[in-house]
Length: 332
Image (tube, rainbow, N blue to C red; front, side):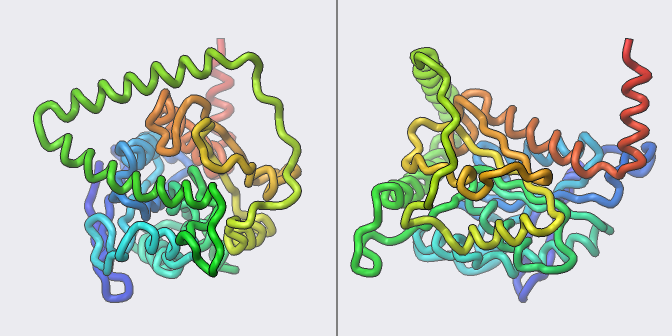
């Protein structure tokens, strides 16, 4: 069951959608009664996410018995607030943690409103950055977990900022941001007419065939790279500090990235940030998809990974033990 919500934060009406587990009150305890997942998507699209991926994740979590909330950040989607002048200014606000304070207040509102004792915060791209900044800014009463999908680890800077030209990766990212904003507008225009859906399916199918052809042409699987020694000049050092503070806490982390051969920057940020084993950190890479997880089976995989991680990591211990015992009894 879905319910639209409206919360007042800093004088702004912020709107979102709550996905409630079906028949929650009448079912036996699941171990998720006090748990809620809050998803952020502060990008060029509303809280539904690219290709409605956020909707699919929230529906999947609800089927597992977990309350899921999708929120529009100020100025985005259905929420009130001032819009940034362009995509570059928006990206710069996100990468500095500009949405973190209002996110913390939203978490507190949803805790009180839904009676949540435990919260998992998650986001995609810039939403992942906001989630990490928000969690790191709270030394106490933190969310119990964070999932970060396709995290934007680098800074997006204007060409020629500080009297220097940005490197190729940053310039390419800026172009990608502007291109994605244009694509979002074109998708809306296409889908508003009768043939738009068919045309979109045809284009996605052609891209899938091309992607599979590239994968089959590979001679050997890629070898695991050694941890890099130092990040590139456009690395978001402030975000790195946030992640390091979270690693010192008991918060559990999930990082998911797409194995996209077209990626502008080849630097392995996660290998740099997580050179060793971390018992509370999980890393996943989805092959054959793109930054938006729409190519190949990216959408199905991201829904599966997030749902499985939340269900496995945050089920109340007693219910987890009961569920495990029942599953063992059911084995042939």
